[in-house]
Length: 310
Ligand SMILES: [Zn+2]
Image (cartoon, rainbow, N blue to C red; front, side, top):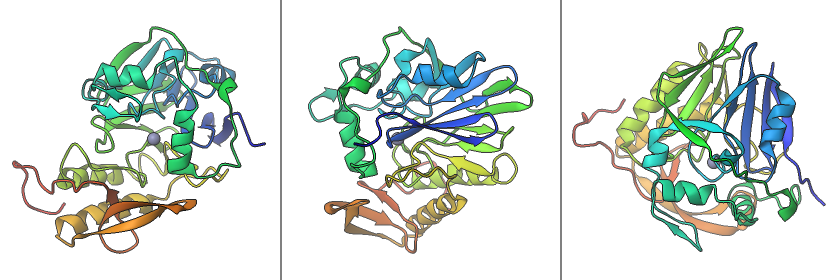
């Protein structure tokens, strides 16, 4: 038998990482006046109960992006904050059994009440690959049924938690149309969802534009944040919780630059992390230890962009 409950780990002062069955990370940050919750996972725990066991302050819930492993439990809360594009420009998706039309149709599917274990197995198979560590069953499913108010945020919006703990929202689309990350200048941590990990993606804009976003993120390193906590700490099924190495982000930038320079790509059959018997054809851009892996090549420059390499 494996674990059936989320792991809660204190990663900084009054800052908790909640790992939902190995699949994804959510965070609770507490200031002297208020608290902030970052992301709302899938639906395999009573997340609200966990939040309220960690903090007795009033709190807001922000969502990095509207993917099933980050927005799944939004109906446990009265209100969430998210970039407008994540809702209005949520793309049509094929979820196997169901195809959604995009926009609220996609969001409603992602947060539906008649939820099952499929999402867990899909995420586990794709990202985690460790079937022994977590073994939940239907009894853990908890989606919530509140009529949640969706409030929109944009780059520069801040959440003042008190005691000098100010958290600012920034754009970094690519993995999704309106992906945001949140920089907590109090504890100097960037909470980045999926925008700067190995799953960062380059859809929705050019590789050139993506370089600019990555450069902006990197420019704050050392001053506004010195640790990065992502949406998926345990991709490889390990029970360790460490901040992501900044070199991963530098490597992503180098890979995009290599692509813009025309250094080309390869199509490789790559095995999944801990499922070495499962292979996917993947395009890899960039040489050296870092590369972008996507299924379709991003455009290099949009029509109105200068043909330079940032
Ligand atoms: Zn994710």
